[in-house]
Image (cartoon, rainbow, N blue to C red):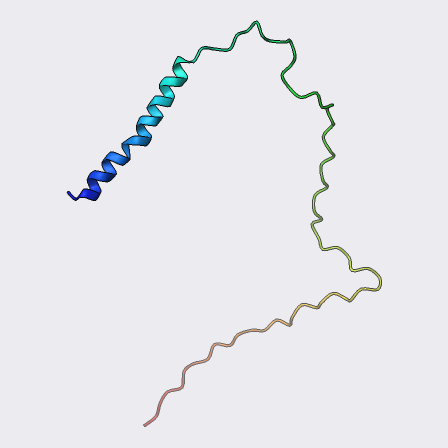
Length: 91
């Protein structure tokens, strides 16, 4: 075991110790006094705005190009592949 391994074993215990101390500190905290409560709702005093209308869904088909737009592109011609036999070599 090298010095690097010993150093890492000691240094990595520091965050674990700090985490345990934080948990211990949080457990020992006393709750806030309830007598200091002013009776408000605890929120902001901004007036409530209604939610905006939901957006309409996207169209399912492409939109028209208009009366002066380019015509739609035609689909390419279909082609059929041919299956051919390999040539035989004649000596």
